Amino acid sequence: MRYAIIGTGAIGGFYGGRLARAGFDVHFLLHSDFEYVRDNGLRVDSYDGSFVISHPQAYASVAGMPPCDVVIVALKTTANGGLPAMLAPLLTERTLVLLIQNGVGVEADVEAALPGVQLAAGLAYICTTKVGPGHIEHTSNGKLSVANYSCRDQGLIDGLLADLGAAGIRAAAVDYAKARWMKAMWNMPFNGPCSVLGQTTDRMLASPSGERLVRALLAEVIGAARACGAVGIDESVGERMIEMTRNMPPYSPSMKVDCDLGRPMEIEYLYTKPIAMAREAGYAMPHMEMVEMQLRAIEELRAVGPAVGQ
Image 1: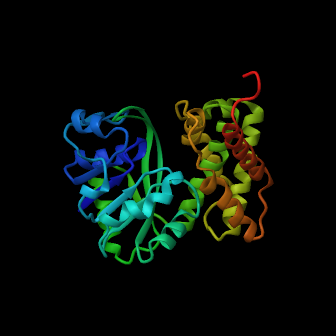
Image 2: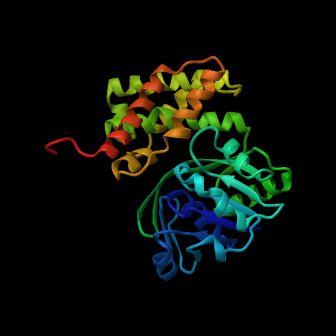
Protein backbone atom coordinates (compact mmCIF):
# COMPACT_ATOMS: atom_id res chain seq x y z
CA MET A 1 0.00 0.00 0.00
CA ARG A 2 1.03 3.61 -0.53
CA TYR A 3 1.31 5.79 2.59
CA ALA A 4 1.25 9.53 3.25
CA ILE A 5 2.58 10.97 6.50
CA ILE A 6 0.96 14.30 7.41
CA GLY A 7 3.14 15.75 10.14
CA THR A 8 6.66 14.34 10.03
CA GLY A 9 7.55 15.11 13.64
CA ALA A 10 8.31 12.90 16.62
CA ILE A 11 5.38 10.54 15.96
CA GLY A 12 4.88 10.70 12.20
CA GLY A 13 8.60 10.65 11.52
CA PHE A 14 9.08 7.57 13.67
CA TYR A 15 6.24 5.43 12.32
CA GLY A 16 6.64 6.69 8.75
CA GLY A 17 10.38 6.16 8.98
CA ARG A 18 9.91 2.58 10.16
CA LEU A 19 7.57 1.89 7.22
CA ALA A 20 9.99 3.47 4.74
CA ARG A 21 12.93 1.53 6.19
CA ALA A 22 10.95 -1.68 5.61
CA GLY A 23 10.59 -0.80 1.93
CA PHE A 24 7.04 0.55 1.81
CA ASP A 25 6.05 3.45 -0.47
CA VAL A 26 5.91 6.36 1.99
CA HIS A 27 5.43 10.06 1.16
CA PHE A 28 6.31 12.59 3.88
CA LEU A 29 4.74 16.04 4.22
CA LEU A 30 7.06 18.45 6.05
CA HIS A 31 6.95 22.10 7.01
CA SER A 32 10.02 23.83 8.46
CA ASP A 33 12.22 20.73 8.02
CA PHE A 34 11.47 20.16 4.34
CA GLU A 35 14.74 21.38 2.82
CA TYR A 36 16.86 19.78 5.54
CA VAL A 37 15.18 16.37 5.22
CA ARG A 38 15.21 16.53 1.43
CA ASP A 39 18.96 17.19 1.45
CA ASN A 40 20.08 15.20 4.52
CA GLY A 41 17.47 12.54 5.13
CA LEU A 42 15.37 11.55 8.13
CA ARG A 43 17.25 10.27 11.20
CA VAL A 44 15.78 8.20 14.04
CA ASP A 45 17.92 7.44 17.09
CA SER A 46 16.14 4.58 18.84
CA TYR A 47 16.85 2.33 21.78
CA ASP A 48 15.32 -0.35 19.55
CA GLY A 49 17.61 0.21 16.55
CA SER A 50 18.64 3.54 15.01
CA PHE A 51 18.38 4.27 11.29
CA VAL A 52 18.49 6.96 8.61
CA ILE A 53 16.18 7.26 5.59
CA SER A 54 18.73 8.83 3.25
CA HIS A 55 16.42 9.82 0.40
CA PRO A 56 12.85 10.09 1.70
CA GLN A 57 10.01 11.10 -0.60
CA ALA A 58 9.64 14.54 0.98
CA TYR A 59 7.18 17.30 0.10
CA ALA A 60 6.63 20.88 1.24
CA SER A 61 3.01 20.85 0.05
CA VAL A 62 0.29 18.27 -0.53
CA ALA A 63 -0.08 19.64 -4.06
CA GLY A 64 2.67 17.37 -5.36
CA MET A 65 1.76 14.28 -3.35
CA PRO A 66 -0.04 11.31 -4.94
CA PRO A 67 -3.34 9.85 -3.72
CA CYS A 68 -2.62 7.22 -1.08
CA ASP A 69 -4.17 4.07 0.34
CA VAL A 70 -3.45 5.13 3.92
CA VAL A 71 -2.94 8.68 5.19
CA ILE A 72 -1.36 8.83 8.63
CA VAL A 73 -2.13 12.13 10.35
CA ALA A 74 0.36 12.87 13.12
CA LEU A 75 -0.25 16.61 13.47
CA LYS A 76 -1.11 18.26 16.76
CA THR A 77 -4.88 18.71 16.98
CA THR A 78 -4.31 22.47 17.18
CA ALA A 79 -3.69 22.26 13.40
CA ASN A 80 -6.88 20.34 12.59
CA GLY A 81 -8.64 23.41 11.20
CA GLY A 82 -6.51 23.05 8.07
CA LEU A 83 -6.86 19.28 7.85
CA PRO A 84 -9.67 19.07 5.25
CA ALA A 85 -7.66 21.09 2.73
CA MET A 86 -4.53 19.02 3.39
CA LEU A 87 -6.32 15.69 3.04
CA ALA A 88 -8.45 16.42 -0.04
CA PRO A 89 -5.73 15.84 -2.72
CA LEU A 90 -4.64 12.57 -1.07
CA LEU A 91 -8.01 10.86 -0.77
CA THR A 92 -9.77 8.35 -2.97
CA GLU A 93 -13.03 6.58 -2.15
CA ARG A 94 -10.93 3.77 -0.68
CA THR A 95 -8.40 5.78 1.36
CA LEU A 96 -8.11 5.12 5.09
CA VAL A 97 -7.16 8.09 7.29
CA LEU A 98 -5.42 7.05 10.52
CA LEU A 99 -5.51 9.82 13.13
CA ILE A 100 -2.54 9.37 15.49
CA GLN A 101 -3.61 12.31 17.61
CA ASN A 102 -4.18 12.91 21.30
CA GLY A 103 -7.53 13.38 22.92
CA VAL A 104 -11.16 12.29 22.76
CA GLY A 105 -13.69 13.37 20.13
CA VAL A 106 -11.23 14.01 17.30
CA GLU A 107 -12.73 11.56 14.78
CA ALA A 108 -16.27 12.97 15.07
CA ASP A 109 -15.08 16.46 14.17
CA VAL A 110 -12.94 15.27 11.24
CA GLU A 111 -15.84 13.19 9.92
CA ALA A 112 -18.14 16.22 10.13
CA ALA A 113 -15.65 18.21 8.04
CA LEU A 114 -15.10 15.36 5.54
CA PRO A 115 -18.35 13.38 5.22
CA GLY A 116 -17.83 9.82 4.04
CA VAL A 117 -14.13 9.67 4.86
CA GLN A 118 -12.90 6.33 6.23
CA LEU A 119 -11.35 6.96 9.65
CA ALA A 120 -9.46 4.99 12.25
CA ALA A 121 -7.86 6.12 15.49
CA GLY A 122 -4.20 5.47 16.15
CA LEU A 123 -3.15 5.34 19.81
CA ALA A 124 0.63 5.59 20.14
CA TYR A 125 2.19 4.31 23.35
CA ILE A 126 5.65 5.69 22.77
CA CYS A 127 8.24 8.15 24.05
CA THR A 128 9.67 10.08 21.11
CA THR A 129 11.01 13.62 20.84
CA LYS A 130 12.05 15.70 17.87
CA VAL A 131 15.50 16.89 18.93
CA GLY A 132 16.52 18.70 15.74
CA PRO A 133 15.62 19.17 12.06
CA GLY A 134 14.75 15.75 10.66
CA HIS A 135 16.09 14.14 13.85
CA ILE A 136 13.91 12.03 16.18
CA GLU A 137 14.90 10.41 19.45
CA HIS A 138 12.99 7.29 20.55
CA THR A 139 13.59 6.32 24.17
CA SER A 140 10.81 3.92 25.20
CA ASN A 141 7.87 1.78 24.06
CA GLY A 142 6.46 2.03 20.53
CA LYS A 143 3.17 0.12 20.48
CA LEU A 144 0.44 1.43 18.16
CA SER A 145 -3.21 0.50 18.77
CA VAL A 146 -5.54 0.89 15.78
CA ALA A 147 -9.28 1.38 16.34
CA ASN A 148 -11.79 1.41 13.49
CA TYR A 149 -14.09 4.45 13.60
CA SER A 150 -15.77 4.61 10.18
CA CYS A 151 -13.75 2.38 7.86
CA ARG A 152 -16.05 0.34 5.61
CA ASP A 153 -13.26 -1.90 4.30
CA GLN A 154 -11.84 -4.15 7.01
CA GLY A 155 -9.21 -5.26 4.52
CA LEU A 156 -7.60 -1.81 4.78
CA ILE A 157 -7.28 -2.15 8.54
CA ASP A 158 -5.90 -5.67 8.20
CA GLY A 159 -3.42 -4.56 5.53
CA LEU A 160 -2.26 -1.64 7.66
CA LEU A 161 -1.68 -3.90 10.66
CA ALA A 162 0.25 -6.37 8.51
CA ASP A 163 2.48 -3.62 7.10
CA LEU A 164 3.13 -2.15 10.54
CA GLY A 165 4.11 -5.58 11.80
CA ALA A 166 6.45 -6.07 8.83
CA ALA A 167 8.05 -2.73 9.74
CA GLY A 168 8.80 -3.95 13.27
CA ILE A 169 5.99 -1.98 14.92
CA ARG A 170 3.87 -3.71 17.58
CA ALA A 171 0.35 -3.01 16.36
CA ALA A 172 -3.06 -4.43 17.21
CA ALA A 173 -6.72 -3.77 16.47
CA VAL A 174 -8.69 -2.54 19.49
CA ASP A 175 -12.17 -1.29 20.39
CA TYR A 176 -12.59 2.42 19.57
CA ALA A 177 -14.20 3.79 22.74
CA LYS A 178 -12.00 1.73 25.03
CA ALA A 179 -8.85 2.71 23.12
CA ARG A 180 -9.50 6.47 23.17
CA TRP A 181 -10.32 6.50 26.88
CA MET A 182 -7.40 4.17 27.70
CA LYS A 183 -5.03 6.68 26.13
CA ALA A 184 -6.79 9.48 28.01
CA MET A 185 -6.01 7.59 31.23
CA TRP A 186 -2.36 8.48 30.67
CA ASN A 187 -2.67 11.75 28.78
CA MET A 188 -5.03 13.59 31.10
CA PRO A 189 -3.30 12.90 34.46
CA PHE A 190 0.19 13.62 33.12
CA ASN A 191 0.11 16.14 30.26
CA GLY A 192 -1.66 18.96 32.08
CA PRO A 193 0.00 18.69 35.50
CA CYS A 194 3.48 18.31 33.98
CA SER A 195 2.81 21.46 31.93
CA VAL A 196 1.38 23.52 34.80
CA LEU A 197 4.08 22.47 37.29
CA GLY A 198 6.95 22.36 34.80
CA GLN A 199 7.93 18.79 35.70
CA THR A 200 8.77 15.56 33.87
CA THR A 201 6.77 12.39 34.52
CA ASP A 202 9.33 10.90 36.88
CA ARG A 203 9.32 14.07 39.00
CA MET A 204 5.52 14.02 39.24
CA LEU A 205 5.65 10.53 40.73
CA ALA A 206 8.67 11.31 42.93
CA SER A 207 6.56 13.82 44.87
CA PRO A 208 3.95 12.31 47.24
CA SER A 209 1.60 15.22 46.51
CA GLY A 210 2.31 14.93 42.80
CA GLU A 211 1.42 11.25 42.83
CA ARG A 212 -1.77 11.95 44.80
CA LEU A 213 -2.74 14.49 42.14
CA VAL A 214 -2.06 12.01 39.34
CA ARG A 215 -4.14 9.35 41.10
CA ALA A 216 -7.05 11.73 41.73
CA LEU A 217 -7.10 12.72 38.07
CA LEU A 218 -6.78 9.11 36.97
CA ALA A 219 -9.80 8.14 39.07
CA GLU A 220 -11.85 10.81 37.31
CA VAL A 221 -10.83 9.55 33.86
CA ILE A 222 -11.86 6.00 34.82
CA GLY A 223 -15.24 7.28 36.01
CA ALA A 224 -15.72 9.35 32.86
CA ALA A 225 -14.80 6.43 30.61
CA ARG A 226 -17.37 4.20 32.31
CA ALA A 227 -20.04 6.91 32.10
CA CYS A 228 -19.34 7.31 28.38
CA GLY A 229 -19.75 3.60 27.69
CA ALA A 230 -16.16 2.35 27.52
CA VAL A 231 -15.88 -1.20 28.87
CA GLY A 232 -12.93 -3.04 30.34
CA ILE A 233 -11.42 0.01 32.04
CA ASP A 234 -10.86 -0.19 35.80
CA GLU A 235 -8.48 0.72 38.59
CA SER A 236 -6.11 -2.15 37.79
CA VAL A 237 -5.47 -0.67 34.34
CA GLY A 238 -4.70 2.68 35.94
CA GLU A 239 -2.30 1.08 38.39
CA ARG A 240 -0.42 -0.58 35.53
CA MET A 241 -0.13 2.79 33.77
CA ILE A 242 1.35 4.42 36.85
CA GLU A 243 3.89 1.62 37.25
CA MET A 244 4.74 1.77 33.53
CA THR A 245 5.35 5.50 33.87
CA ARG A 246 7.41 5.02 37.02
CA ASN A 247 9.70 2.68 35.08
CA MET A 248 10.05 4.97 32.06
CA PRO A 249 13.05 7.26 31.55
CA PRO A 250 12.36 10.89 32.57
CA TYR A 251 9.91 12.20 29.97
CA SER A 252 8.35 15.54 29.05
CA PRO A 253 4.84 14.92 27.66
CA SER A 254 4.05 16.62 24.36
CA MET A 255 1.90 19.29 26.02
CA LYS A 256 4.74 20.25 28.35
CA VAL A 257 7.08 20.59 25.36
CA ASP A 258 4.55 22.87 23.66
CA CYS A 259 4.04 24.85 26.88
CA ASP A 260 7.77 25.33 27.41
CA LEU A 261 8.22 26.54 23.82
CA GLY A 262 5.26 28.92 23.94
CA ARG A 263 3.27 26.95 21.36
CA PRO A 264 -0.52 26.37 21.44
CA MET A 265 -1.44 23.43 23.67
CA GLU A 266 -3.90 20.65 22.78
CA ILE A 267 -6.35 21.65 25.51
CA GLU A 268 -9.53 21.20 23.45
CA TYR A 269 -9.32 17.45 22.79
CA LEU A 270 -7.21 16.47 25.79
CA TYR A 271 -9.40 18.25 28.35
CA THR A 272 -12.34 20.38 27.18
CA LYS A 273 -14.13 17.81 25.01
CA PRO A 274 -13.72 14.76 27.27
CA ILE A 275 -14.82 16.81 30.29
CA ALA A 276 -17.91 17.95 28.34
CA MET A 277 -18.66 14.40 27.14
CA ALA A 278 -18.47 13.12 30.72
CA ARG A 279 -20.72 15.93 31.93
CA GLU A 280 -23.31 15.08 29.25
CA ALA A 281 -23.18 11.46 30.46
CA GLY A 282 -23.88 12.62 34.03
CA TYR A 283 -20.33 12.46 35.42
CA ALA A 284 -18.44 15.47 36.81
CA MET A 285 -14.64 15.86 36.68
CA PRO A 286 -13.90 18.72 39.14
CA HIS A 287 -10.16 18.06 39.48
CA MET A 288 -9.79 17.85 35.71
CA GLU A 289 -11.77 21.06 35.25
CA MET A 290 -9.25 22.79 37.52
CA VAL A 291 -6.36 21.53 35.38
CA GLU A 292 -8.15 22.74 32.25
CA MET A 293 -8.63 26.21 33.77
CA GLN A 294 -4.95 26.41 34.70
CA LEU A 295 -3.91 25.48 31.16
CA ARG A 296 -6.32 28.03 29.66
CA ALA A 297 -4.93 30.66 32.04
CA ILE A 298 -1.37 29.92 30.89
CA GLU A 299 -2.37 30.53 27.26
CA GLU A 300 -4.44 33.62 28.08
CA LEU A 301 -1.65 35.20 30.14
CA ARG A 302 0.86 34.40 27.42
CA ALA A 303 -1.35 36.35 24.99
CA VAL A 304 -1.53 39.31 27.40
CA GLY A 305 2.25 39.47 27.64
CA PRO A 306 4.72 39.51 30.54
CA ALA A 307 3.85 41.08 33.88
CA VAL A 308 5.03 44.61 34.58
CA GLY A 309 8.70 44.54 35.54
CA GLN A 310 9.43 41.20 33.87
